[in-house]
Amino acid sequence: MTAIAATSASEPSVVASNVVVKCVGLTKNFKDFWMRNRVRAVDNIDLEIRKGELFGLLGPNGSGKSTTIKMLLGLLHPTAGRIAVFGKLPEDVATKKNIGYLPEESYLYRFLNARETLDYYGRLFHQSRPQRMRRIDMLLEMVGLDAVQRRPVGEYSKGMQRRIGLAQALINDPQFLILDEPTTGMDPIGTRQIKDLLLELRRRGKTILLCSHLLADVEDVCDRVSIMYGGKVRAEGTVDELLVRGDMTTLQTDALDDATLDEIRQVLQRHGKQLGQVDRPRQKLESLFLDIVARAQAEGVATAGAHARGQIAAFLTGMEGQPTAAPAEVGEEVIDHLVHAPRPPEPAAAVAAREAPEASAAAAAQRDLINDLVQPEPASPAPQAASTAPRPVAPAPKRQEHADQSLIDSLIQPQQPDDKA
Image (cartoon, rainbow, N blue to C red; front, top):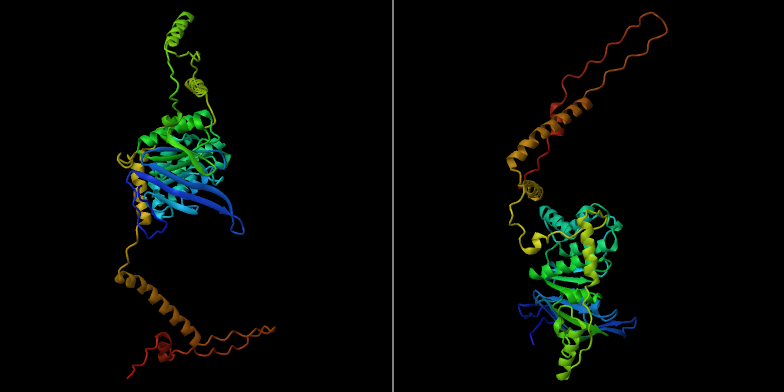
């Protein structure tokens, strides 16, 4: 058995390079108020997800799927067992940058629009503004929401909210993508687009854990499947290993008439076999639905919802940064560098030259204030009598010409500390 991460963060972990997730004896008990075991949500399961694999985790409600996912993300601590994600404990913060997660419910800020929502999540990963803008444009086109990107998320339908939720799970270009019911509330068009996107991401080397109740979707895209019930893994294997029936054979030919069918029955009877069922093949309802919609789109019929998915985002394919940047993007990068670049320290000579005029002006203001306080104000003229005869005016006291300059200088100049012996 491959060694995996121990429960102590100080102990090293040894995991095969092609294994992304490894669980051994994983168990989770939920306790009541008195710390008694109330329910065992996950019961001693072993799980392995390999690099570049699209793995399906199935089971009815209450089988332990969501609890297992939360333990893989480090949101819950296991009661027993061991977990390794990228060879480290799930609580290791360094692994979070390589994980994208779409929860079962889209917990989005309803008053933000699609661009603001993706910009918020891009900031959490410390992405620069030019990088965020490029990725947001790519993701909105990829999930078909570029035409409604300015509408508040609270006005989106549930299927459109799942689309923006998928975009936020991909904003950091994760190597391991966890999707919990990604197609809930989506129409058949959106469901088909999500399945095509998952197949493309797997082809690009991403590792995906898909949890869904839509078994047909899992059957179409998953490499291996694990079916849980009551907290235990009841069956696990590739889709062919679980679904192919070895006791029957299906033959597909052109349409046969009754005479040919009778001959085939006779041949089978000579070999001790019987012709069980004869019917005509039917196409899937999904195929018919998508064909009708495709014809309507070809006729130019408008729709107010999400449109067809665009090309996969370049940064998800490892091609980000290779094309030459457009002039507008170069300008944004220059502005971002200038805004965030540290300001160099100002030379001491420049500081002294800048502060010298301010100090001189402050000293002159202090001198004017002291001169006004030292010299007396001129006497105000006495009010004239009611008589018209001119009244002799007493001469004003002569203004003091020479103030004690030494007193003024002592007030202006700061006192020097006495030299100590």
